[in-house]
Image (cartoon, rainbow, N blue to C red; front, top):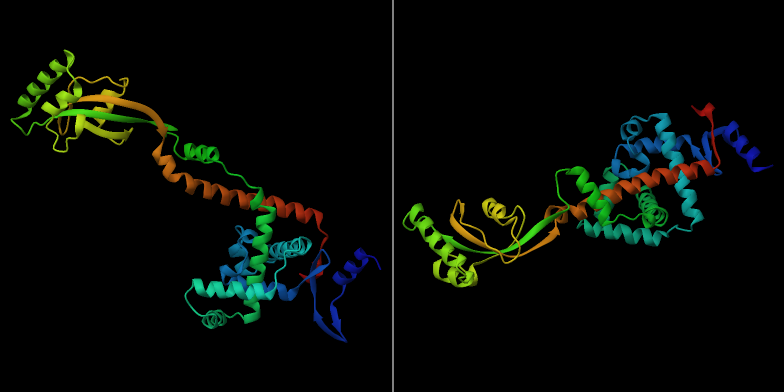
Amino acid sequence: MNKTLAVFCLLSIPLWAGAEIVERVSAIVNAEPILESDFKSLKQRSAKPDFLYPFLVENNFELLKKGDRKASQDYLIGEKILESEIRRLNLSVTYEKVEQEISSIAKRSRISTDDLYREIHKEGFSTSQYQAFVKENIERQSLLEQEIISKIRVTDEDALGEYLRMHPEARVTVDEFTVAHILFDPKKGGAEAAYVRAQEALTRLNKGGSFETLAQQFSEDPNFSSGGLLGTFKGGEFLKEIEDAISSLSAGQTTRIVRSRIGFHIVKLISKKVAPDPRFQREKDRIKARLIEQAIHRQFRVWLQSKKEGAFIRINNTAL
């Protein structure tokens, strides 16, 4: 009897034990039967989302929970395809490995293995069912890593493209300035007097005076440092009035008198360079992780469909 005929026979008649019907076959996937009891088991598992494989669930969780026949059948066929590929690639694990993983799960949960099993039993699952679930997860993760994850590449450029799509107003890079200033504080004699002092310092500077020396003599910055150094800032991180004043300067040039909310300034641009947008740098890893997750789901769907097309699948419509 050839394979096709054998499968046809399986689909056409119930499984018998003497004269008693044991179980009806709903479908055959690569010579492996999907039984009516598998549908009942799936509905039980669907009451607890963690007991379903998310890559097979997709957007069908509510349908599976209700016991929808088509959604359940698709899920069970997907499981059989995974089982076939795990066997083909020799990715099966021993129950010793399963017990090690269960011990690790208990340890991460800070409970004993016995307590973990007690919690599982409260959820309505037996020890053997939970062991089978963990075994499947280990094997499926190995399959996913070998067939899907290892082939996915998400670069910084991909993350940047997604960042710009999410933030079309954003810039790829920002200017980074190192600046020094001489501050004239209006709290010392009023704004008019502070402005007069600033004019005097600017006149000396324009006559060739050293900015660093004038900063030492005139600056009223309470946090004054040598040469009036303020530090290094990226665009958007500092006083807008000062950023606007130095935006057109070259390194080594100074501004006219600049008024800000803290007083009057004469500012020197020490250096200017282009730096990556710090907002993108903060979000990059999170964006890459999301792109990888999306790519895994997308490639899994393509992979599963190709495996279904290459598999032997027969549905027993009389089982409906």
